[in-house]
Length: 170
Image (cartoon, rainbow, N blue to C red; front, side, top):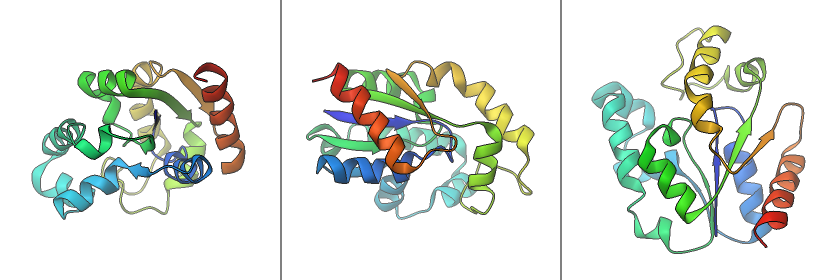
């Protein structure tokens, strides 16, 4: 089974995904990093030189990658990945989707020192994070499960993911 971790940037998808994959003894893929390796360009460079539409096209195409469809694994999606209906259908048909949530202030605190967030302006503003969340929440809600990550350790988040998955997909 594939466990997909979705949600806004700064909700813990990558860190929780790494620990979850280690716990399950399976591969972990951060889709943004995977795309960077396949294209030889950073996500920020793709956004800057080719635009968001080109990046979203790469995201849509990545789900055809045989590696991502052949084994049990944990996949952390980019925050905008589930906006595409085909991406959502792929996730739902091949695995279980977990939405990691955090309050806008928590997200701001977690990403304020990051320079590789192409959708966030400089200086970072809380209202911009809230605006992105408002646009995406209807999509994130389509996940099988959600976990609030505010004030929780990565181990607590992973434990909650495992409880939900094991209880309902054993």
